[in-house]
Picture (tube, rainbow, N blue to C red):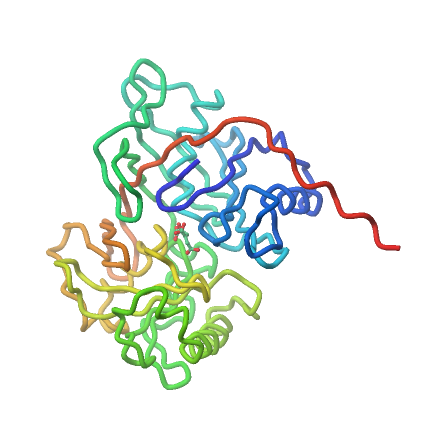
Length: 348
Ligand code: NQM
């Protein structure tokens, strides 16, 4: 399914091996990792298309389904559950109805989803006229051609998803290697900094940023140190924290962004990444807040990114999160049987 601006393989948990080692080995073979083109598998040769959702019915009170997100490396044989994905999340409700995990609820269905990676809960609401998921609709999201039916995602308990606290260093602002940063986690651990403080304009294209190896080295040094301060330990092989560089808005939004996931440049920005960056901007003293043109309280905050903008609704009470919501679209692309690459011969 496409979920938002990501694409992944969605599985029923019961169809995969229960042990994580066996499961991960199978998923790497299914997606074609490690290989820069993922030529022998389903992956799309980019972190945003090398994703897996594992979905199961839940017996927890007030929860319909449980969603485990797995980020597969493209060139590396890695499978990480250390981050969430708010984009694939958009496909979870429709998938749950398609697979009979949740009964459709009339013209519209709401599915309560436990995001296993973080323990947070999201409610997805989408059209199910006549008891079938409707994918066609008039909602456009930046980074996806055309329009589709909207999926409204309302988040709960996103603060401290992976780093344990909204402000994992205990500060709204830190200085890391001479660069003022805000280390924040409202669904995604992100290091937020002004682009100018890292020698960038913040308006470069993703290709220009990808070609700037000196900038990449500065970002890596920054996130390694910030990762430690955030209590994430050695993050050299981890997908988090991400880094988002800020510049004044140019398209009528609140802020312009360029995001590294964690070193590849995002063509847009992740959902929970955007929620997290918006949260930082709402806090007095946050790094780069002076660059923002903030909306009136209660209005959506538009995060500009290389391929458009993403509007998020975040409400804070001081530094406590009251609400975070976003609209995405999702689409079923294919339903069938995958034939994984066979396991490699045992050594010797
Ligand atoms: O931030 C990219 C994406 C993501 C994750 C990433 C995401 C999110 O665009 O919620 O969706 O940050 O690796 O899908």
